[in-house]
Length: 434
Image (cartoon, rainbow, N blue to C red; front, side):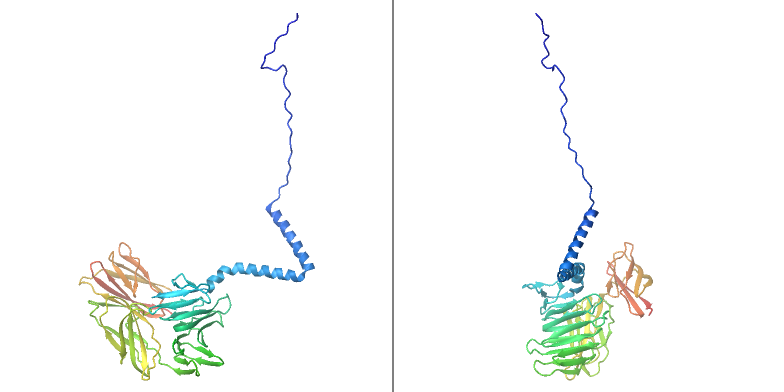
């Protein structure tokens, strides 16, 4: 009987055929972004050409809208910066109500003003608003104004204006770069336009609704209805609520002499020391009024001499510190001049008998700016022309740059005080060439 050799259970009797693999071939063509953009532009050109042929008026409207949108996007940020006005000085309570708001908010130096905004000062508030063309409006206490115009376009005449709803405003204009620029202030139904390098004071009585405009520098034109009046330096126009407007001459403001602007005054006991104030006489003036304040906008008047018949007066009782002063002239007819320039002086307490180290080692001219080079004691405090020297090296050396000075001869005063209370004073003369 034939036998059969058993096969191994785990081993196949014959080798299996390999599985069949199905392959899919994928082919592609690379297209760059540049090619896509070219095709899109071609498609857009074909569409525009069709619109131009079939609907020429629609084509013109579309292109105008595109051009306007591009121009707006390109100049949007620049126009906001150029047309907004800023606060240059703030003192006391000053509030702002934006044109698109119903709330009053406290003003700060980051507040930008646009056309239609309202600015209101409290009884102790002062604000100086500066426009991009260099025009300044000083808003006095108890005043409400509206920003009426603020047009600033590159290479075109600028136009700025405010309206006094109540109160008083002083405004000054610079040397405009674009001829035909305008700076105006309006009261009730009248408006005054100032010319370049001019200054005027405008006020509106909230009870009588009567206004007056006084030009202290340059010239201006006042218009109410069909009436136009030209104002020159030291002329005033009165604008009653019902009657005709009238023009008259006013007193010139006094010219200040002493203390010289930015000068330091050293006294052993400042509060008992008598500080002498002097100014030039004004024609037709009967008396003068002197004011001394610790702030440049005179919100804190510390001393006042309301009726000085001469051209000078001594004032005592001032503590050591920085002060501002100005003078107003008044005639026999009770007509007042504009306020004079404001001068600043510093009253410094003289220390003990010992002197402190203070040397002026040299000066250098940088245009109209003077660099003062010197040496003092480490830790000392220095004041140069009423400006604090902020950077004194550990070894006492210092370099200080003055503000730009006018051509001519100047005396620069340097005063210092050390930690022991000792003081020293040095002077150096410089000549600024023309």
